[in-house]
Image (cartoon, rainbow, N blue to C red; front, side, top):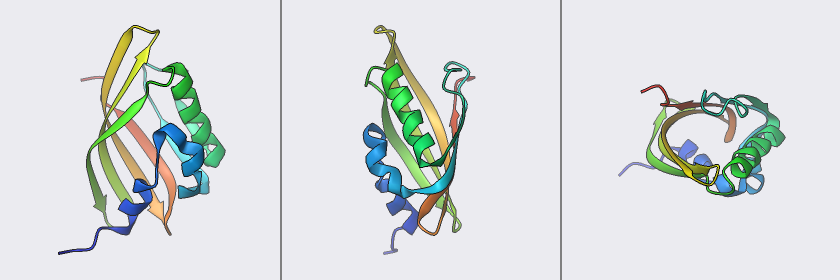
Amino acid sequence: MTDPHPNLAVLARLNPADMAGSADAFAPDVVFHYFNPHLPDLTGDYIGREGVVAFFAKIGAKSKGTFTVTPQSIHPFGDELVVTHTINTMTLNDDLDISTQVVVVWRIVDGLIREVWDIPSVFT
C-alpha cells in the first residue's frame, strides 16, 4: 500500500462553499486563472488569497448559492502538479441549469497552492 501524495491533502482542505475558511491552503501570492466564455464577467486572473475568495464569492452570488463542485478524478504528477476533473453545476437566472466538465491544474509548492488553471469544456 502506498501513502497518498501530500498535495492531495492540501486539496482535501478546500471547501468551495467556504473559501474564506480554506484560504490558508493558498500561498499569499497565489494566482487563480479563470476562463469561461459563457461567464465573461468572471473571466480573469485572481491574485492572492483575497482574489481567490473574491472569485468564489462572485460565482456564489451569480448562482445564488447553487454552485457546486463534484470531483470525478484527482491525479498528482511529480512534486508540484495535481490535475482534477470535476463536474461543476449551478443555476443562473433562476431557471438555467448548467453542468460543465472542468479540468483544474493545481501547482502546489511547500504545502501551499501557488497557481491554479481552471479549464472548462465549454467548446465541446
